[in-house]
Image 1 (tube, rainbow, N blue to C red):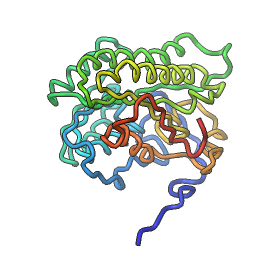
Image 2 (image 1 turned 180 degrees about the vertical axis):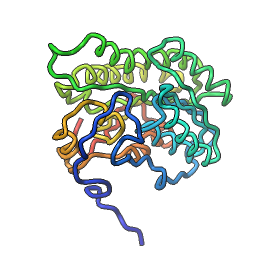
Image 3 (image 1 turned 30 degrees about the horizontal axis):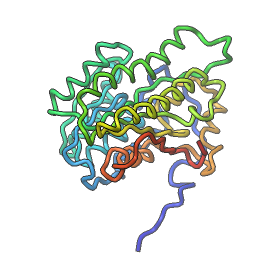
Image 4 (image 1 turned 90 degrees about the vertical axis):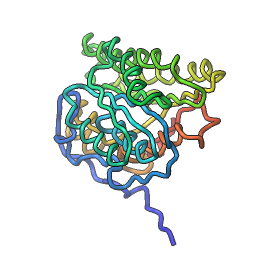
Length: 293
C-alpha cells in the first residue's frame, strides 16, 4: 500500500528567518538549506545516454535538475560563476556518484565569448548535446522605478536575456532531432511584482523566446519549452534584498500555503526533456504551488 504526502506540509510551512547575502547567493550561508533532491530523487533511466548542459547549475533549481538528470542517466555539464566553484563541485559530486560524467564550466554568461564557447566545450567533453537548460538568472529588489540603477538593469538584462541568447545561438546549429531546450522562466512573466520589474520583463521576454523558437525549430525536430516556477527557496532569494517580513511570508500566498523547494521542480525538467513529452513544444509548465499563470 502506498501513501501520498500532503503537499501543504511536505516541506517547510513556516516562514524563513532574516538573512541577507550579496549576489550570487551561497548555499553554505542560506538557512535553512534548500532541498535539491539529494536524498529523495530516484531515477528511472528516462534520460539514458543523453548529454545535458545546464546554466546556473551549481545550486538551487539548476542543482536539482543536474541531480535528477544524472540519476536519469544523462551526462551533465554545469555553468556557474567562478565564485560558486565550491557549490559546483558538490553538485558534480552528486552527478558522478550517479555514475555519470560531470563537467564544470566556470564563467559569466554575460560574456558573449564564454556563453557561446560552453556549447563546444560540452560537446567536446561528452561527444554531443541533447538537452540545453537555460537556467542562469539574476534578480534584485527595486525600490521604485526611479531608483532602478542602469548598471543593475544591465546586469539583469545581460544575465537573463543576452546570456540565454548567446548560448542558444551557439547550440541551435548543433542540436539534432529529438533534442530539447528548456528555459527557466517565472510566474513573474505573467504576474509581475513592481519590486522585480526588470526581472519580470526578462521573464516575459523568455516566454516569447520559447514560443518563437518552438515555431522555428519544430520542423527540425527540436522541442523548446519553459518551466515557470513560483516562490522557490533558492540562494537567489536571500540575495534579492528583501526585508525580514518578506522572507517570513515568502510563499505563504500560494494556494498550498508555502514556498517550494528546488527538488519539487526537477520532475518538470525531466518530463520536458524526456520522450514522455515528445509532443510538447512551445509550452510553459507552471510549478507555482497552485498560483495560476
